[in-house]
Image 1: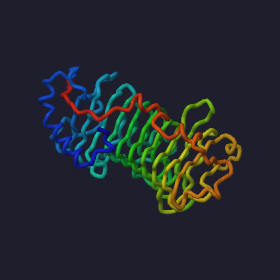
Image 2: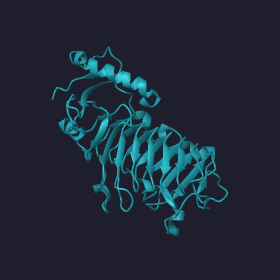
Image 3: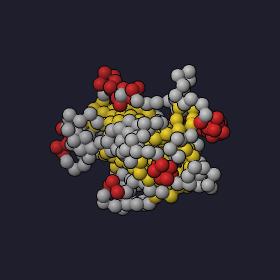
Image 4: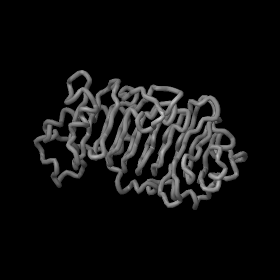
Length: 336
């Protein structure tokens, strides 16, 4: 069962079972063909000292380089003041909490070098996060990334991603965000990923003229862009849906609720009219007071059903080939 459809209470009960069952599972045949459900190595992080590690980074560091096993790092509730990196040579890691509001990874760092600021930087492929908060508390005045995703095939379920400027650096690779809450004011979803946002809540903190997205596609040959499906946009002031970080920036919103925070023009060319000819900004069957297209910039696109179709399913990110179900069998690591 996908985490996105599993209630938090049910997930907590499941985790209790997983924790108590791990000793038994360690003695079973982890790769037995008689069991159809996926398995994973289980590591527990608990600040009280009752887990395998007290710090999340220590648990990640313990995973061998060039790892080929699914590793589930279960993070007990708490506020983890850490600056974390999941390195490129450690794929197949899941970071999982029980409730995003009570399991928080936080740091405070801003600056002019975007990639130096993330609270959490995911550089590895086949990464998953479930029910966690990623937070950068730096505030206004500089780039301050809460989460950088620069690995291919990364998925996020029920997470909260919080900062002010450049909150989510959706950088490189194919990514899936399901039922996530993303908050910021200026270009708070940015980068050059190929990403699907499914049932996410986007909340703008900008008082005036904020920007939700700054997608960075720089060439028509690049297979990148952001698709937002069944999402919700709220905020405290006004914002555009996006502006082009790259000349061929590509963003589509479909079946999404737009509050009055969305400015009537919808999109901005970032003071470069030449990008009006190359950026691709599309909308399809959105609703709410901010969804009216009567005053949209003329260079945006109101899509037909045929034009919208490629953006509306997991096929947009080839997700059916790599999105995996939640593990249901666990074992202790042999390398601990």
